Image (cartoon, rainbow, N blue to C red; front, side):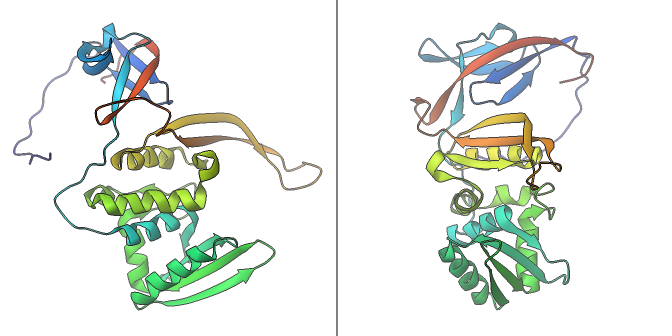
Length: 274
């Protein structure tokens, strides 16, 4: 349920000397003041417990139910196209009215979906088969196509992309489409891998997206990932990557919530506000 904000006021906070850092089994980290009251699952029931009294073995409840709002902005089909773009698309560099997609050659069905969708919007479309890269390169020409993706996604490169706040004002069918479209193109459903990216901020956005439609992801950082393109590995570089794994069937449920155990509790000294 959403309630309108009718007033705002400032409350003075003293600097906290300590804060509590909670790491969950799925990799999420949340920080609280010591007196923050947390909805907790302990001894097979829900309890309100101050964060300073949390312990390993307690669990947090994360929604397993999509949340929606009272509007009809978007639908599943348009959301899925946006998911394809988020995973495999970019804005053209030669024209301000152009967006592009690079779709795996095995997914000609996605090419047909993208072509049909934007053709119905009155856009011009070209599709080129690039055998050396094993992709279909799609170019969509039309200000309406650019306006559509810019409404919900910022950034152009994979390392820059973010989901914009307007996405959270869409219906759950639209967000489900974004989730599925991204998963089908950038993910690996056969191994439950939703995403593998070098964009930490986008990874956090995708966690929120998944949660908004009732899915739960496991977050893992790998600071020692490497890649190279030359046979002699002379161009080998080390980088940090972020993996998101779908865990819907892994966690037990309490009503409409996933039960996610607390893996680590730390009391950290700090001179900053929480």
